[in-house]
Each structure stands twice: as structure tokens, then as C-alpha cells.
Amino acid sequence: MGSISDFVDSSPLPPFRVLIIGGSYGGLSAALNLCDLCDGLPPRCGPKAKEGSEPVERPRFTIETTIVDERDGFFHLIGSPLALADEQYAPKAWVKYADIPALQTRSNIKVLHGSIQSVDPEQKKAKFIARGMGVAATELTYDYLVVASGLRRVWPVVPQSSRRKQYLFEVGDHIRAATVGRHGVVVVGGGAVGIEMAAELKLVHPHLKVTLVHSRDKLLSSEPLPDDVKDRSLELLREAGVDVLLSHRVDRTDETVDEYGQSCQRMHFTNGHNLVADHVIMAISQSVPSTSFLPGAVLDDEGYVRIEANLSFPAPYSDDHFAIGDLVRWSGIKRCGGAMHMGYLAAHNIHQRMLYRLGGAEQSRETPVDLTLDEIPPMIGLAVGKKAVAYWPEAGTTSGEDVMKLFFGEDLGFTICWNHLGLGRSCEQA
Image (cartoon, rainbow, N blue to C red; front, top):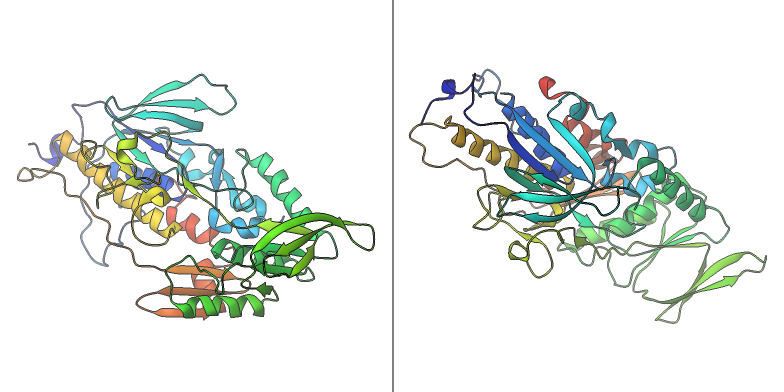
């Protein structure tokens, strides 16, 4: 086995081909951290070097990375509740891949707009269908695969458009429908999405009557969180001016006309209560993993990818196939921070395999040295109007405007995520 210096200037192999399915938090993290490592730079999402420490020597070699995504840009999913409430914010939440400096300054990172029809891990081939090009499939070959296609979420939890221009029309129509009328809007579902959607609508449109209805006696009822998190979320929601009806399960909704001859909706609940609204938003997301293109052998009964602690597929595909983000079967509540961390881990572990194949690992090393994912305890950060509530085991429950600033900044986390991923800079500037 040769040393690092043996292959810095010349490699016995052609450039490694990396295929990343999904260009959101996890996929971009994997692509850009791997870009850094192969350029001999510290990974942007990795631990920061201690002050005064010696720089780590890293070899440089070429890779060819292809990112496939159904959207034509990065959509800040965390900002979806605000994007669906504020037409001024909505354009910021979707940045076309062609406008992201970190992707455009490297000729060996390519983004394809479309979807993956199938993956053959034995042959290391994937069938790609370009958006708007019919059903004709193109074959993509790869040396390493990272699946980061996330969960398929329904409207209006997230926009369904695949192009930024369509998305702006989609959210504009939604905002106008939700904010025009005298009876207000009802948001159905007291999970994280429903809470944030109701709070953002009230924050952006303070004169709008906003009501949140939830079928259980506590908010966040499906999350494994302490009751004080759920109770504090309710308090903040009511402080923000949102009316909250707990233990209200929707029976049916009828189209009707009010006393002014205007169309509206009458909601009937199983407890006998009824409510009139101009617009009803269903914030109950039956999200499913976007993994139908993968072989069933790597999926569980619900379609989540079964991964090892190093983010790899189960054997026999564990050497060169990885999965990250919301679609993996792992502990913890789905969070963008977790997806970005997984992207960094996958990038490191793929880089280790590349070094080993090139002969750059230490001569005494028999296998690549992987970083592994720890078990993730339940934790959450929830924006509720001008304040936020957060929970993690070490600190317990905290809330307030300072928590909002820490977790979400001034734009529901867009700038925090943009900067953490280094999307505004080239790989050479990392």
C-alpha cells in the first residue's frame, strides 16, 4: 500500500463517480463536504480545528459528482410555513441550483433536474428520467451512491412545484386564498407543521383570525417529547394570538354561504361543535419515504432504508451505497441538522474508501476508518410566532425570543443553513 505522496500527482484510477439522489440538506452536505475533502480542504460541516493545531495533510484528487433532484433548486423546507404565509419571504426560500455559488464554481459537480426510476446496486447503475422529457430513461453509472431523497410530503405541508417559477405562483395563490375573507382560516393538525403554519400566518397577517384544531388533548401528540414541551408550545401559540381547539376531530366540512352571500366552509367536529372558516388548511402530513426506486432488500416494511451506523446500506452493498436524512430508519425526530450531519459523515466515509482504493491509506490499515452515527435522542426546535420552544435532553425545555434567534435567526433558519453548508462560497473558499 502506497503513501499519500504516491498518488497526489497521478492516480491509477479515473475520477470516482458519485451519484447523489436528492439535493436538499443531506444531499448538498454530502456533495460539498466530499468536494472539500477531495480538494485537500477541511470539510465544511466537520468539527473545527483547534486553534494552533497543525493543519491536516489531505491528498487532492478528482471526482465527478452528479446530484439528481425533482426540483430545479434548493428549497428551505424549514421555512415552508413562512413561505406559505409571506409573499415577500417565499422567493428567498427557493434558490435555483444554477444560482448557488458553491455548486457553480466547480465543473465536476453537475445537477440534473428529474427523478430516478430505479437503482441496480449490483451493476452500480441508475435509470434517470429528466423533468419534462417524457418517459425515456438515461442510464447513470456510479462508483458511490448517496440516497438523500427524503420524504414525500403532501400539499400544503410543502409546495409541490418542481420549478421555482411555478412554486411562486403556487404559494401566492395559497396565501391569497388563506387571507381573504371575514371568517378566517383554520389549520387542522397540531403537530410541528400545523403549529408553525398557524403561528406564521398570524405573525404575517395579524388581523387574520387563525384557529388551530387538533384531535388530541395535547399538541405534538405523536412526538416522544416531555409534556412541558407540548404545554409550552400551546402557551406560545395562544400568546401569538392563535385560537386553539384541542380534542376536536374533524367529521366533515361542507361548502356553504354566509349571511353576506359569500362562499365559506362549515366544519363539523365529532364532539358536536361546528366552525365557519373562509379557508381550511390540512396540516396533517402522511409522509412516506421517497425510496420506491430502491430494491426492497434494503428497505423496511414502511419503505425506510435500513442503514448501518456508518450510514451504509446493509451487506452486500455496504462498501459503496449510503443513505442519509429523513428516509433512513434511525432514532430521533427528523431534523435538517441531523440530515446535514449525516451528509458530512457519509462524505467522510466515502472519502476513506476512495483513499483506500487509491493506495493512500496508511500502510498498516486494512480497512477504511469510518465515522459512525450515534443514537439520536428526541429533540426539537419549534418556531411559534416571534418566539420559539426548544428541547434537548441536556438542557431540557427552553423558550423565548432568544431561543428563536439562536435556532432560527431572522428568517426561519435559512441563513443558518445556507452558511453552515457554505452555499454562498466555492469549494476552494471552504
